[in-house]
Image (cartoon, rainbow, N blue to C red; front, side, top):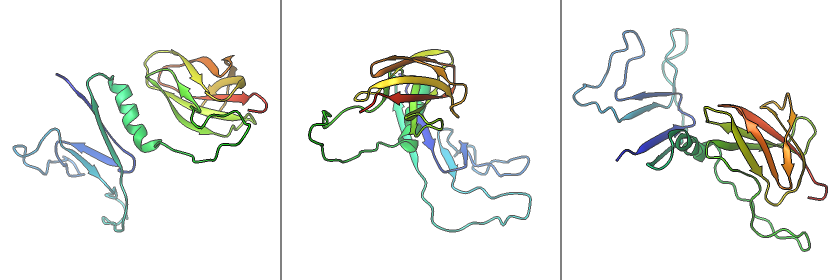
Length: 198
């Protein structure tokens, strides 16, 4: 049975597989091929071997994060995206006391997307004086129809544009849902105006 494995790092600048090669031509291997393992990942914490006036040494304490995941029933792009998301967009919880009379439950979904190859990567204030911007990334090789749901929030109007919120085109709004097309392999902004009082 074949199993897909994804590995992600956020801070390490260099990665090699199977062996460690010297950084100069002809890039010779440093581990005997009889001992080396093609499944071994070597990750450099620092990268300062330059043919200039930089010293070839560094010191100090640093923290490096890695994520590893596997799965047989998930496509490779989705597995990679979700593995990297464990580092770049960790789960964030907000603790607050429920306000009397606001009609909001103690638990709920703020924002979600209904497509396995399209992921929400950031929520941010709008650059164009709207209420909210949702950044989405597609790992699909085709145009995809997606639905972004805002759960407890009512959306009055929405627009989709580039990651810089340029070239905005209005999206279809259906209550708390926004439907639009995401181009293949793109990073897009979904810009929304919320219903007043929400």
